[in-house]
Length: 234
Image 1: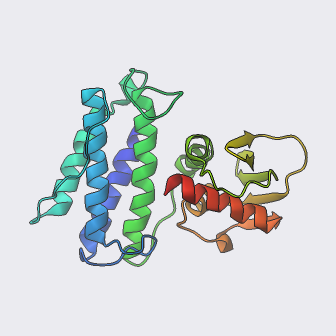
Image 2: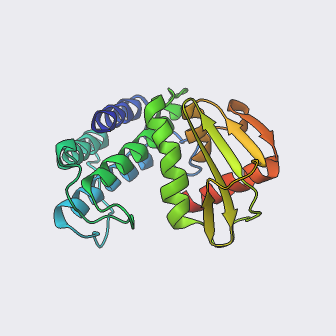
Image 3: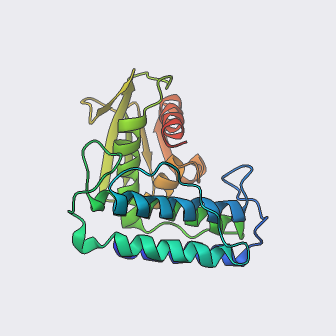
């Protein structure tokens, strides 16, 4: 994950350098490339403080250098990667995850945060490269277990009908119930969503459409799952 974070952080910077700061970001209505670089740079700085201070910062808004916001972003990314030393991944630290209070949580979380926004920045320049398949497969797992597991919207459509997501080498089955997610329920899935890990992860994050996937079975259950993820990650 440490290498992936560095690669994705630099790729985001390169993409932001190529686009005018007022260029719209297609997947984020109302957001420009300048807004995006400020948003991600601010998150990187907030997490660096969270780890170094051992507690959630009171605020996380930062002000980029108006002369060179991408350089400001790169400085923050470098500070973040220095703090998230993979050799110290097991070190206990404050997080927002009930079951993982380690540096490894933040290394994983920041890799996925940065990777998805790298796709946003590249899309603003005319075309985005897919996510690394190993990173994306872990990203699917993170969305389903961490985000849905801790942020399931109270008004999510909860039919209880299982949906299976498949990527090469991995699969997950989830069913949404009122206030809870059922992982790996027995019985046949109502629907199966399959594709590359990148396509499935980006679909969950609202960065790719169903046309990039194979969807079999109850499309209503599939779209309810996607809506719940949107509510959980929004």
